[in-house]
Length: 292
Ligand code: NAD
Image: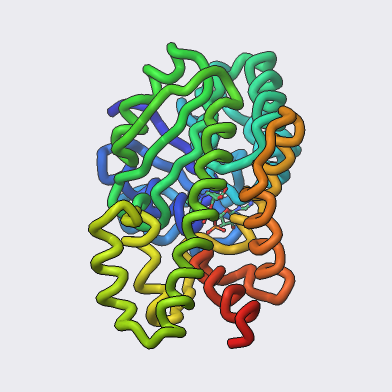
């Protein structure tokens, strides 16, 4: 491939994604506020930049993978940010999970400035990023989607254009509602089974083969059984996402009663100091409520 890619935000997700792009032959220049993130990219033949401006100066495509809406805003609109420093016509792909309304506004600004913009949040977790098996939900124009498709194919498996700018983020908000409710249900089942002294590993094996089976069960059961909550996906990021889905639902006038309940439980986990743990640590909240 001949496109030059800048990759901003090389954390749990961005780092393996940038490495896959470098391994696929793209010239990738990475930047992260924390220098540790860039090392795997450099080992895969990519370049390290010392600022976002330096990373994007020569790029045809600018990928962003940072935590939250204010972070994306800072990356794009600050002095020395992408809008100030990227080449005219560059395609900005925001892989982060942020607010749909802010996305639509940033996309409008980008297009006014002569850039192209796709929101392309992902699902599949750290495993999905490492195995290049992400689901990617893309908002933006069909033409920009086609331009970006070869890049998406390098990091993802299920790649769907879902509508105009902001739609990708709306779909991701729905994704996070489903995932959080699933994790909470699984955590409750584990604590329930243990209370009866059932062989929980065997129980989860048989549950996984029936209608209760899910990717959440497959990917999160080990964390729960062994009480090891290294992230993965941090509670504090899921707290951000539950805020996005509950406020967007309120805005639309639709009810998300289960989402609101799980949002409270995720918020509580964060409030007691579990924000840095994997979201499978919702199990600890069930234990607390059970006096365990
Ligand atoms: P992370 O905290 O591991 O990585 C984010 C990185 O962005 C950090 O290395 C941070 O230093 C960097 N960063 C923040 N602001 C920056 C800036 N202004 N300039 C340059 N770098 C900056 O988070 P993550 O788990 O990789 O998640 C990133 C996004 O992907 C979030 O929106 C999250 O909700 C979403 N997501 C995460 C997962 C997962 O399983 N971890 C799965 C799907 C989607």
